[in-house]
Structure formats: structure tokens, C-alpha cells
Length: 95
Image 1 (cartoon, helix red, strand yellow):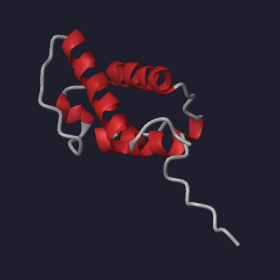
Image 2: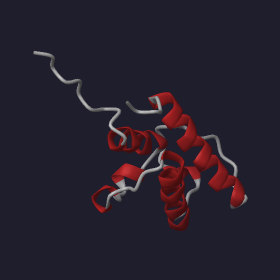
Image 3: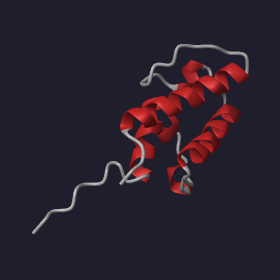
Image 4: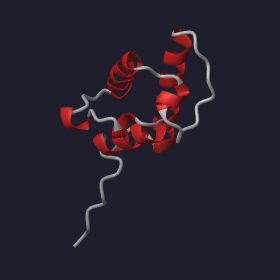
């Protein structure tokens, strides 16, 4: 059973993005569906976000998931994390 809800994942990813922006002297309101580039994240910030996600959720992001699509927005990072921790797995059918 996953230890995080979708809301907790979104809150943590939003906090990570906010922390990265603050550390680099930028402040922006973070819309979960806005692109992270538009929020002010540069390529090195994306690497820091990836490392932060791995540390926060105690997972390793597989190479095939290191795509621009998965790091486009808070919502896309949230969806990737939910999938990786098994939150979006279908329920087993009981016979």
C-alpha cells in the first residue's frame, strides 16, 4: 500500500519546486498545471528537482522516465511518482 496520497505527492512536489526557486532567488506562484520552465526552473534546477523527488519519495526514477514530459509540470511529476510507487495500479479482481 502506498504511503503517500496524490494530494501529499502534489504538496511535496510543489514544496520542492518552491524550495528550488527560492534557493535561486526566484519566487513564483506555482500552478500545478503550468510548465516548470515558465515557473522559472532552468535545466540544472530540473536535475535538483529529480534528485529531490528521489529523496523525498525514497525511489529511483528509471532512465526511461527521465523525460521532458514527466518533468513538464507539478502535475506531470505527481503522476509519474504516483505510478512509480504503485498508487495508480489497478485493483486486483477477486475471483
